[in-house]
Image (tube, rainbow, N blue to C red; front, top):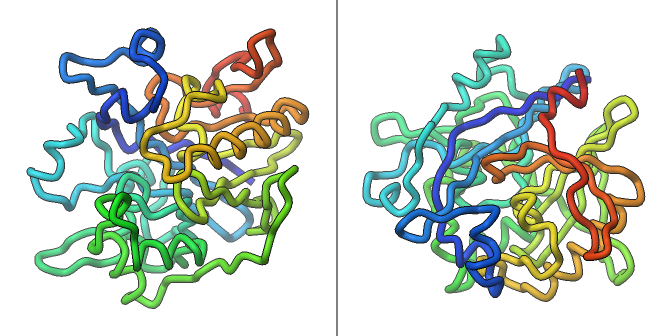
Length: 289
């Protein structure tokens, strides 16, 4: 089994939206904003090679939107997924599975590309996996979240017949997170605070457990419990999910892999007098070398 971090570039989002009720005077120390109050964030994907399967987790923002759309997010240092895979001597045709944590544009945009007037799957031989609650929400979004679900990112997956929905059994525990099996070495937590049915992949490799944090914890700066994004649909649910996850991660020495932290790729945790915090930060390649 092998793991590879694939960086598809960076973009900007409003710092206040990213940190919710936390004052700028606090979060600006670790995530400094520019003159427009925008902070820089990564678009980091993860490739898991497991036997004959080549599983890509999330796909970044892609490049098919128009200039007006991108003017809101200032993408820069952009690298296509195709280029990222080429560095590993792979092509999009080699990907067997695309595991989408959720369907917001900065996670699913690279799953589809535009050729002339057609929208086509970037990975023609892959199964595209999405949780059923997340898919149903994207098809009938609430008014607050609607702008994050773009039809050109989502509907072509269904039209290609490469879509596979992950049904979720009823789960009512309030003392642990729901966890489902995905593959031999990957399970997924199911969380609902940021958006309904978001999947948080947990990968076991050798003696390490690596968790792809998606938007449950976008960055090291979001580890303190009150640091919840304004983008989250149910912030109090996020708060509960973070607390459950962080306790488990600290107890079991999980490695957190950050999709959006522009400075820190991975971290491990430690308990402090202020609560659970990052113990050390490092590159994924340094952990599994």
